[in-house]
Image 1: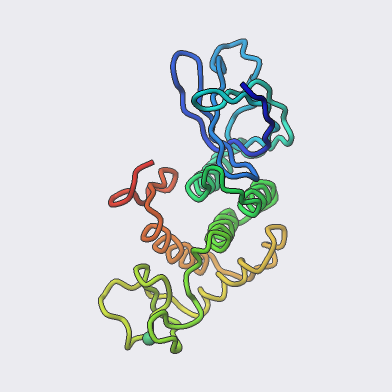
Image 2: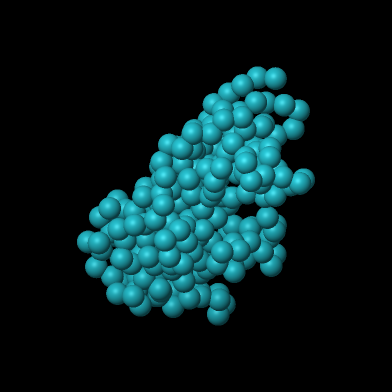
Length: 245
Ligand SMILES: [Zn+2]
């Protein structure tokens, strides 16, 4: 048995056996799953520290199966994420997105960085839909899954008002082969590039109407639902054809 340390954000947990739990973390070294023994007992030494959204320093022991957590220290508490239903919902959207886009033993400090920044921004953001959109787009960008929004994906000609999820980007009228396009606009594309280019703490400077944010969200989620084979429970999206996680 060997002891090791890891730090990261708790993403989700699954109850197992009578009092144990498997907790999934996002760390700088990728996704990490570990067992917390006795965590559901009233006098557990872990208390509520392993709750999703918390930023933790862990001590773990490697065994035959999943590693076991032997020590937990809170690095950063974010009490505001449970203050109201909207914050809680947004937190679960963010954590689920991080969960689906992280890979075990695949170092990705950028995903951890933007997830940390998004959760920290939550308390000050008065447009939750914009924060969620910004997070989703940044995750796509660091994952190499950003849709092509500068020109037609087929002929590289000018394209502005049709988006094809299957094609992975904008298509022009000549290259649209079926009716499966989402009507979009140059304004919606502008909003997407503007949030991509800004830090989370600069989101209040983004000039975007609720309608534009909703239209951008629709486009981004059509793209994710088509290209990511996972079910996003917190948004009720996906999973029809893909792998249900
Ligand atoms: Zn074209």
